[in-house]
Picture 1 (cartoon, rainbow over the protein chains, first blue to last red):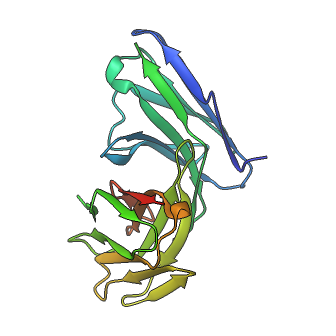
Picture 2 (cartoon, rainbow over the protein chains, first blue to last red):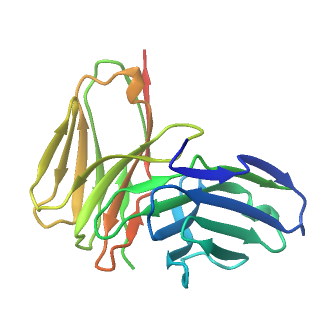
Length: 112
Length: 110
């Protein structure tokens, strides 16, 4: 099984719909992250969490919300999806200090 | 705001050639990581460098961290088709966050 699992892998949704992307990890890490990736823009941080009670906004949090249900689970919600939220979304975990980031396989979201 | 600029954005070369890609910033980082991402997958760590001037080798890949810890380079010798992918650099800041570059898309033609 993968260390970081994202569901769904692909999703097409309509403008205005609410959608949730889920992430679970088996690394035992406290730190979890949600990124979106667009061509030519790299990985942009949406939200991050250092533990279950700690949620922080990233550089592009508007239009998104998150929930840290447990150490191993971190979900991302789009309350009312819009077409410019069409992107590839990644969940990642990381240990403390200068450690490796482990990524899920990504969710390709299309908002029509 | 700390920024990491990667160059070139896109590189297409023939198998067997050598290449270098760069990751530059005006900010100092505590560490610098290089990742490779293949289509349909998340980025996977290649190397972490933490000391100014550090050089690490991973088979045909050579990574260097600048003396001032503001820049890094990745050199590939005798590129192979399996090296095709998106190469991302990420700098570790004082809050142990990762600052990401936009990536270099590398295509190695047979």
